[in-house]
Length: 451
View (cartoon, one colour):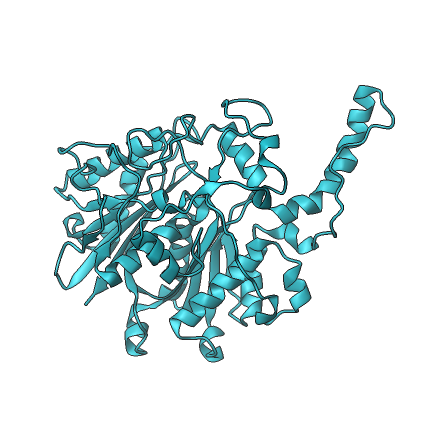
């Protein structure tokens, strides 16, 4: 099966509007998470915050990763500026990232090539600020009479009446429309759709995009994922499932960590058949050698990961890549910071890599920016591509008590906690990345970079 070349890269992450800024943050070992503010929430966070876990209609954790101070010009796209301005950030961030990936690939202005380019974007099927604004009047019209009847108060009215302008109806379609808007804005091919494979969405989107290239249905593909849910809804959701740390500590790969930090952002790549990229003299940032997908099947619980399902994804990736796991120099773990998630991943890594006597260096970028949910894989891809390019593996920060022991693959010895030169002078560098989602959607991606 033909390998796929990554020839373009873009991102909009907390504290970073492009890969160069993200690399600078990684190099400076910067923690880009912070407490949620009025700007993100739309109201004073103290109204809903209570540090006691489990209280109804309250969230108990304030930290997150947020896109701040981002300037967006709606006039830069082949769409009416007024229309673009009326759209939710889901669309605006998607347009920005797509344009930057196209520019980075060298195909900006090459309409002949772009007309054969499709788009697959991982999106989160959750409400956004604009979609909530759109549906709020419907909620009020439906709920007010019922509560009025229950309370026997005919003049009862819900608080918080909307005073802002009505949101564009297009914002009701945040789950599927962003890819189509990208395609229209840049006059791309008719292949465009969104998927939701939970936290594995990035690698699922890349897998599907690779299929379109390998089957000849497209010559270029944009693929990536975006996390842009309404911050209040998201905070209530993860407080409800108790995904945030009750001890206030989220440090992936650290023994003290008890939960994750939800974050927002987007990353995209431009993909091309490897032989075509070589033929056309494109700058190949990295080559996708294998992309293994799996599902846990029937498991204990929606939120309970399964080590065997993860191992299946590993095996499929290496079967496709036709390389030995011992060749992997660095493994970017999914490592969300939850006790169950990190321990399960540690066991699956031991069960697969340990049996094959493979001991790659390990780390996680979630310590820097938090967990971008469906877009988490794009953070890992951006980090590892830049790491191979700069011949340095950035530190996994904020780890004081690393999980694992010296007899395991995940061990204090293998964990990159200070910036480390690339461990080999071999012709090819190999990195592996994992992304595991709710419901057992597993993925494992293998990238290579030749000298």
